[in-house]
Length: 631
Image (spheres, rainbow, N blue to C red):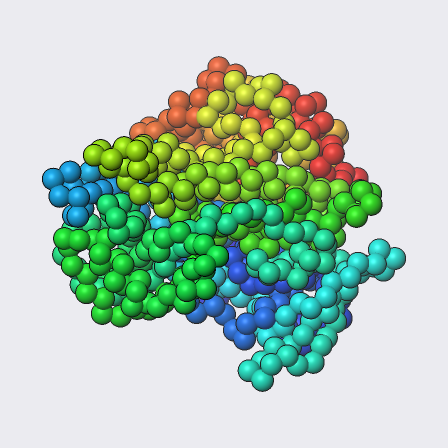
């Protein structure tokens, strides 16, 4: 993390100096972006937008204050990678429980009334991410994001006790979206207030008023299977209580055990059976005592003595999705600039079994946030915002398809060798599917299709380990200036900038020519897109990775673009050049052409946008032509 660029100041360097008028209080008449809902999607979006001091953002929440106890708890590897860009990964990893291995239990062949461990697998395959899959309370996740917002110049806080009741669009107005809000309180609905916005994002849950306003509906079917979930402090002789455990009993149902942070707390997902019209109301009224009793039966012959239940709920599995995530298509089929968006549960719902809901929702917010920032800062045309729904809706559909299959397998009884006609799921098949589905559970299976923000794979052979359209898979490097071993991807922040990672050719001549071109050529996309008087890396953060050991590199011989002068004093940025880590060569690990090198273009949300040869100047300029507005 870099700081003191524009002068030394005392205090926490991770906290920006407050802007004029911060912190805010009264709700203004107009804003650039209004976010409805302070759940995971809304807070990631708000945290991203808070990085742009000139963009006026407000977030309204119907609750009276921050979330204290959340339902979601699984944090995928990909989400931890995103949190690293916000400077939050260290804090998260210290507090969270790490999902290292998963165990599988099924009926004992000698006594089917008892369960027996039959499998144990690594939760995440080696090398899939530098970060683990972890578990932490959703309320804590949201608190981390709120802290990011509080440390920015705007001292950003949600406006609590405000619920959206109506959303209207009028394109004749400079702030075309009129939102009517109602104040909430213990005594019931209170006065209404209105606010106008350039853009509105509904992160207001499965019963979203914003979704209704743009004519979208959640479509899909419930799985007609109910689960009880509880967070509990308990005493048990079950040996795998501190491992993630998938348990199939012969006739008592199934159980998923997820240890929680802190070393003692455990979450139990308890199978409550099929839901029918006749029993749906009764299942909804299931008591915590019945959930405990069912869990105890499934765990036989082991005991479970629940001392305290922190939280419990009953839910019916369901996967639903909207057709679009914005209002870019009018009811009569006319295409227009999108002004109203939906994210998270407002546009897709998942079961808890695959651990996708919160993670996918946060990726929605990350995808949309930098795009709104680029448009509102005048860096990109408003048509960039159409890519949000085009990219995220297919991703949600793919994950729902996976979630349906995994949830059905988790709910099915185990096959009985003595009664094959009874059906069910082979426990070995369940374990094998779990292993195959690892990339979905880790959140790294997303691949955006070729389009405005994703190039064709014409030059993919130059860097095979950075698939175009997938997230940038970081790897170890050594920083030249101070010999610091680190991950290359961790140099990037959630600041809305594009990354150009230039991997050197064998002799380094093509790398030097690229740097000279980017810095000096009149038609260079870097020169054309960077505002006058701005730092050279204001839009593009150019980093280079050399092939020789760091002790053989003379910093003073690096191209000027890799030693840029920045800020009010023209200080040198010493953190643009890296070399291979001797223990983990990034060129070998990521399939980079050693002879010719490569350019890897990475979007502000950490996804690979393109792979190009070092001398592909025209192709680089052409790729950014439709994306960036260039004087």
